[in-house]
Image (cartoon, rainbow, N blue to C red; front, side, top):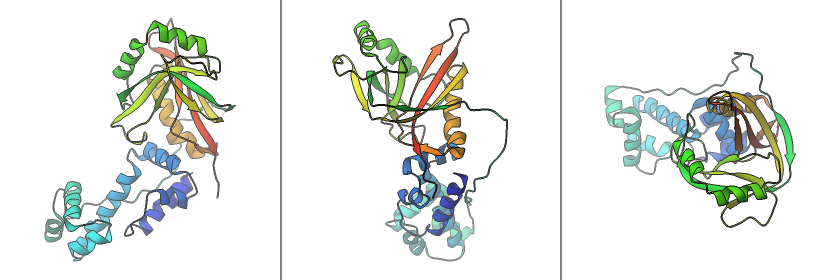
Length: 290
């Protein structure tokens, strides 16, 4: 995967002055667009779109210092008007293109290169499971994106579950894992940035068709899942494991992300405060190694 990431960075450099779609980058290195963007964000903490924009503006800044006209540069780097380019450039650099050219000032955003850094020696435990189609059945609400700490809106969602809803979850739950699970989906940014909102469901897995209207349901097709067990302080350990899945495990495994639709559960330890056994289930598919 590191080789593919570096090939993608080369592709971006070769096409900075072209109007290419971001999907073309993943297509060039033979991985899914979703998988590539998730891995890129996990490693860089910026979206792929932000990176391309920063590289374009950095190159534009260099060309301004070489005496090229603002109009020529604006259209070269895909802006529909000089005003649009000028606004974007000022937001990025703090000055107008004409000012940067006059003062010979340059803000530089370097091309990324990905390398392996050996650290720690931690072992990530996981198992691969083939699972037939099922449905999530539970209660949901829109909540703010939050990758660290306790999301208070999810706590409120859990507290809102009625006795009738709990009883119905217990009645229809009939497939592994036999736990109350947390499912996050429909993110405003497809989980590529920690902003906006997502829909969060608390529920169970079922194959039954007779689910009461007091619960919402989400169909899930048959697929392969990578399951990551973890144990430790909650929610820190679960969130740290989630981050490592995208920044470490996917880099070296033979799999890529099938969809952004993952789920997890946590079993709190009755004798240790804020300590839990957790599992994260991520849908995957075999990677194309072209």
